Amino acid sequence: MRKGWSVVMAFVIAALVLVAGWNRAKCEAGAAPPEPYKVGALFAVTGPASWLGDPEKKTVEMIERQVNAAGGINGHPLKVIVEDTTAKETEAVNAIKKLIDVDGVCAVIGPSTSGESLAVISVAQEKKTPLISCAAAELIVKPVKEWVFKVPQYDSDCVRRIYDYMKEKGWTKAGLITTTTGFGKAGRDQLIKLAKEYNIEIVADETYAPTDTDMTVQLTKIKNTGAQAVINWSIEEGQSTVLKNARQLGLRMQLFQSHGFGNIKYVRLAGRQASEGVVFPAGPLLAPERLPDDHPQKKVLTQYKRDYERRYREDVSTFGGHAYDALHLVIEALKAVGPDKAKIRDYIENKKGFVGTAGVFNFSAEDHCGLDKTAFVMYIVRRSRFVPMR
Image (cartoon, rainbow, N blue to C red):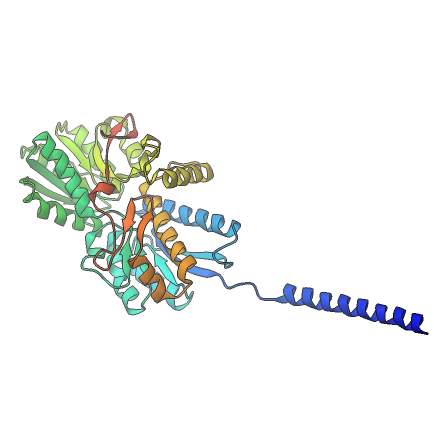
């Protein structure tokens, strides 16, 4: 009897173990997966600023795949929701409201352009949502707005690098030709403001609309002023037209571009002859292989450049780099404090030594960009390539 009872009990225990295991497996299979960390992105994927927004979109999609393939963030998948603003301010405003109110994102990166960024600031402020702009205008973060940051270098520091170069050459007369967009207007303001500091005379001040296809009239006026340099400030394809028209007119003065020239497609659009010898400031991403091995950004720059160019079979640009910086800044915050908006904002504001593509960022309550003019490298176009100047 005792032996038979032992056999029965053994069967009962085994059955209970099997049932418990089955129930546990069933529970685990039916358990809801962790909620994704949702980040919004406002990019001009199409439209006149698509050479900014398209590489930005591709960059965040690549990073999203990389992060999720590695297990996500603290066990949560990353979900980046991209809205195409087509570089229109009204579209950007509507899109940020949708991302915050409908999609429930914890932060927003972008927009691509300065005009759009300035237009959405009030929404980010009102809804207390961190906004990390991918545009350059100093007005985006000066004066400081509690919920707003940006990752491109200051347009004022870009002007300083150009004027430093002019001063080294002994040039004191500059002709300006700037686009009428938010980026162009902000750059023009800085060019005029800082000219006095560098004892540079603005002998011409011309503008063009982003849709203009010929700037011969404006450049002819500049040609007759005795300008020693022409500074072209734009992010649209029109900046390449300026270069072509300048060469057609036989302008012999130095041609400068802003950091909005940091996509090799602008060089190819202008053509080899028109773009040869153009000088402009930009971040070190355009030629990371020329950096010393101990440069603090070299590892980040070379890895991003390699990953992007292998995946998309196109050259990396500074604009995609801005999206890289903005999203990785949010990712670091999410790792540290989770999806709480106020904590993300505080984390970014106090972040020091963040290594990005645009520079090594040191944010503070007084500085929501965290870069200075040393983040720029001066480039010259040689044989349709960006070559760092020494």
